[in-house]
Image (cartoon, rainbow, N blue to C red; front, side, top):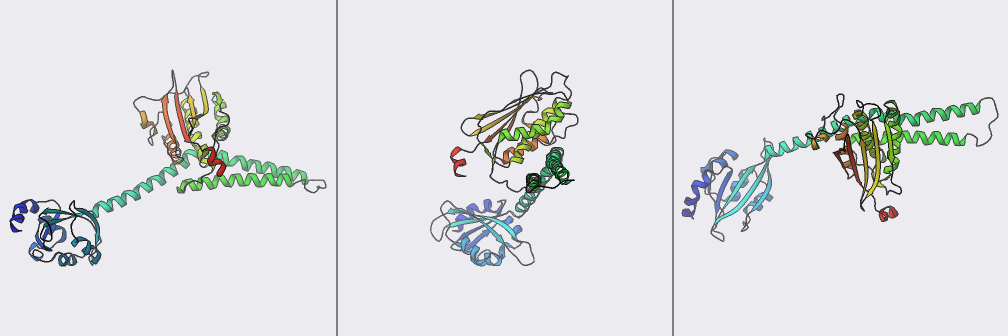
Length: 370
């Protein structure tokens, strides 16, 4: 086997990764990268049985057994962890491949690739991604704060009104049995409604998977219009609503669905702020699209979508408005993707922008068996 080793010796010596050649179970040669990687002189390992060398380098019995097993004709890759006392664990990818000959006397090689730094970088990246997602959720809270405050304020205001009605009922007269029951039921329902909003928001900020409940797109649009109506009235925005009847429900958290629509409606209102009076038009249309999707179109006559931005309009901190945060559209797309859907943007004919939400609807048989 020496002639074969000599023929490949120069190649093996300069191979960029740690490499050892083996024949008859004995180490025939090691290259410079192997010596640097394991900090052992070549003379200390050449000629020794491979299993003794591996044991000396700190590989466990199971790893040693795998590395001295017969090499497949196509070679193989093994991911191992080397542990040496006083040193951090070392992640290694070991590639084995035949070089020449067959049977026990065949010459084969083991290549040791140190992936420790790459693994650490990957773990750091995963931590960074999670931090960025948490920051995105916190940014979403800031973007939605006014709408959420309005939404929570509605049930709280109703509770105050119901409590006032109960107090007036109790003043100055005898109360009949059951007279306050409806008022108390309403107070409890409104308090539960406020609690549901807060619970959903907490889950959103934590990144908790949303429950697989049925959500009505048309109902979500109507709730959002309740939030947006004062701003539209203040800015003299002409509004048109076209809701398709008998839309199937979509699967997802109704509050998150409302936030998607709210972000797009808020974006449309802001985009029309500088348009002349009489030229501010907002149109929301819902429709069934094919057998599997529900579609929502939000059209405005605002400043329009610059062609050079394209899909970058959904990137965080990209905005076409002077005082825009650049987060609303990014959040809307992120939330839609969480529900298994998409958000797309396109220019309207003449003036303005159209945003289209597509969400997977629940099939009738799924609804029946839910």
